[in-house]
Length: 515
Ligand code: FAD
Ligand code: NAD
Image (spheres, rainbow, N blue to C red):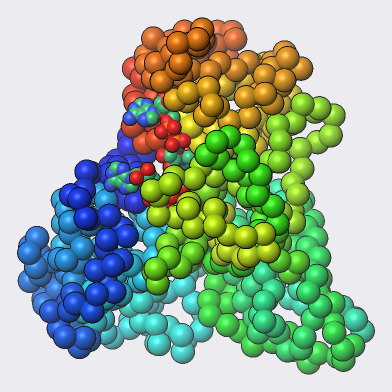
């Protein structure tokens, strides 16, 4: 658990926020970058920066940081950084890529800091064994120093490296990926076909095997993905537009045939269409987004995606956790995905940066949606007996699919209890559905705790506390297999974890949902 807390204390837009001075919001920063001021002190010139030069700029009033080979003068940004100046100073005069990646690799710093760009790090000669994600030598050269570190597996892992092949009939082209991993399922394969480019990302534990090809000829929009779970074989079936024979599958594109850590792969976005917007409460809505026909993406339980939008000329990215369209009260059908739509439950903050813009989208408008991420694994609940969910506000979102999944698929589970913290009764998301579920399923119990209740409220009140938790979290039997999931505002999550640890629950028994 320690690592999670450390992670949360580092720079991040959504996590710890130090109070910023008035006029230092993200929107104010965007305005400053558009003002035409010389933010680098170089009058628009871009320079090559040596390590020695970078190291000289390590003070608050003169601070340069290198991220993925590009050097930024972040001095003017100091006061705008939501994580505070001290967090930014941790990387002053050095390569901050790792630090940055640990907490918010999804933030589009290129866009946010583009007016602070000083130049690139001076290239160093590439060693013969240089680490890079790509297998193509030309790309290694062109992208020297700009790619994530880590990456091609050494010889001991060669046998585990996936490979691919393809074959054709008169009207079909089938691409086959041999992942060499048993227990593959359709959540582990993300396929996109856009503008003649096929991109297949196979997620194998913490690694990603990417196939990225400019296809030889046009194919139809709809694609079929078949998975032979036991042998780990993935087949992508494409329909030819003109039934000609293909002499090759196509041209390799960036990072084609590479096998790297999943978190080192940049986020990939596709445009999804808003098909409905429904009210949940006075400030929260369900947004239903339709995936392109040529995309195969199923977000696993407990994972989130990122939405990306240009706001005032700057690319803004925020995480959201897809939900099911309702809580299942009939568990006869096995839990399954709607693989054509993503449903997001989003609270609109009138003075927020992103959510008012999202709310302004009209039905039929498009928004960019990334691949999914998240540390939660279904294996954490597979033989579970007791599940406790501590949710605050929209921290309820990851609990929705989890509830549906556990109550439907985990036959060992005996109790599932949700403790749902909100400010007022009007803020409780899906209250009716939760109460219905509790009536229908004896294993499920829900408790609402309000921090700002009206006088008439007879239920529990207050904020998360050790006494509330010790009363609520109780094993169904001695040594029962238990998991406690926590999600909400950062102070809520941090306090919850601390109280649970103080009550004697182990690190493995607590999961917090974070970006
Ligand atoms: P922001 O501009 O971030 O502002 C939000 C509020 O904070 C406003 O009231 C604003 O005034 C205030 N604020 C802004 N800056 C500061 C500051 N420095 N100090 C104090 N207050 C400040 N949200 C959902 O609704 N649904 C989800 O499914 C969901 N899933 C998430 C999954 C993950 C993994 C994470 C990390 C977050 C998730 N969120 C979710 C939250 C979401 O990512 C956004 O943070 C949220 O939508 C607010 O974005 P915004 O840009 O509109 O608001
Ligand atoms: P909110 O402000 O309406 O607060 C809901 C409840 O949270 C309050 O009633 C209170 O009980 C508790 N709470 C709030 N601030 C607290 C504090 N400082 N200390 C202790 N308890 C506190 O909540 P909201 O506006 O719906 O915000 C939900 C939060 O959940 C956001 O910060 C969002 O980023 C986060 N979230 C995270 C994930 C994730 O990490 N996977 C998913 C969804 C939402």
